[in-house]
Image (cartoon, rainbow, N blue to C red; front, top):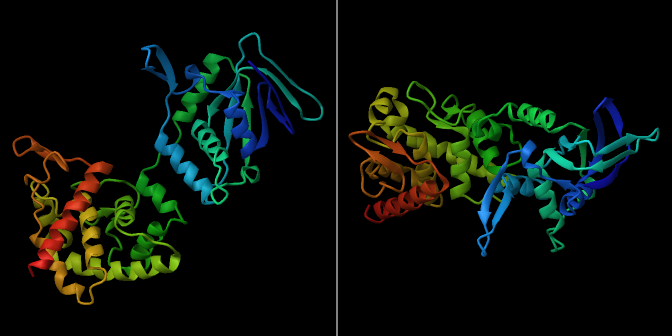
Length: 352
């Protein structure tokens, strides 16, 4: 149970209110346990055991999502969006709104939607380094406050969970700030080489895709893995180079310029796969500082991209020839693929 006064509050309906709360105050409320996580109306809880073998319940959430929000706020690229709190109507809670807009709450104040944002704000509030500190008081979050019982709160969370989910390719396409994103957009919109060849809605390239050869998200992630871009000028210069590189690459790799060859090879080769672009971008980085780099691009055809190759099994590929090969598209498999392709391509250069 907690007591708290929400100021400047307006009533939306019998059990719904709205106000605005600064980021630093939200962080304080979360850290002090005034706003709490209630597994019954959220994502549930997982059970762990401490050193004494006692059961401990932990909230379910994504650390990766918290980190993304943390980094976005820290880089001043975050737009505060609606957070929903629920004052649990359990027969003991008291909620009253006076004429001045002060909403007095006495009861369980649970996070209904916005757990990841509160965790990110709390992490930022704990930062001690001056050059890393963020003035959270400048972030004003619209906050909806409901006074629902458990069943109503669960239904509300179900409604949140039915919200539109977009692919990472579409999400990245909407990102206007990231330098790797800027590079890929320039490749599509200004370079023309990849115009019509990049899937900007879905993450995957299925076998029926006659034009698309790579997804927007894959290109963005591949560039981030191989290049460090410090500013927009570097992004523009890299886009110019990569436009030329992909022009050469598509001309020398049969699977990238012929749909039928791409379709035929996918059963046994990585060459025409969306995933292969993690390796292709890594090759571009190896060639980046070579003046006569264009004459070496064709060496990619000498890379062993056979799905049945021992070096890929268990690291990038699972399954087998009899039941079909499958790509293990994870952060670890991408790192392994980029590392091995870089190493093997450098060997080809040395032996040229």
